[in-house]
Amino acid sequence: MCELSSFSGHPARPSPESQNENCWFDARCPPPYNRGHPMKLLISSRNAHKIREIRDILGRPGLDLLSVDDVPGLPDVDEDGDTFAANALKKARELCRASGLWTIADDSGLEVDALGGAPGVHSARYAGVHGDDGANNAKLLRELESAADRSAQFHSAIALVAPDGREWVAEGICRGRMIHEPRGTGGFGYDPLFVPDGFDQTFAELGSDVKNRISHRARALAEARRTFPLDNLE
Image (cartoon, rainbow, N blue to C red; front, side, top):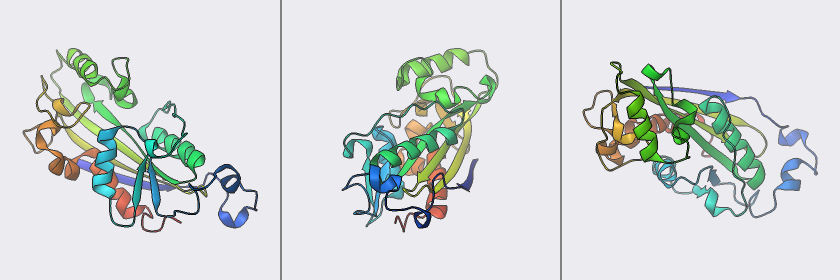
């Protein structure tokens, strides 16, 4: 079962009406990355798989979805939050401030019941090196070797931050189970080990068409499409 939730946060900065000509936005965000392109949306990621998923789900005519690599000089963001939502908001806030663009960010990971919710926010660096999928999967299998309960969930938080400080967050959860050895060549991360509820195949076997309908990120992005002002990025 996959679940959705969303909320709108309070602005972190004053609204445009309360700002003067020397507001942080105008002073710190040089063109062309500010008011000249209101329908540009920055994806706060360099992960090609994640960027492709977001573009597949949110892409539409009139919305230019940029990656971090499309905007020179953007900083790396230290994901040190203790929740997925906190990390997504931090990434979106910092890169929105640096670029002057509306910015969307995702933080997501795997929560295994028998491990008390681990690897959680440490999913990408569970074995020590960020993005080493093979090592992360191997460590997870070792820790689950004697576990009778293989239930788990993927959890995604999507944050949108506007240059005037408004913020939105949507979350999605997809329940499933961990198998004993990797299967499939698609996807990334823990996809070869995760079988979503209602299916017999792993995320890595299901293919992007199915995954983009049922995954945690797909569910969070669907909620984002419903609740975020993606048709009016001004």
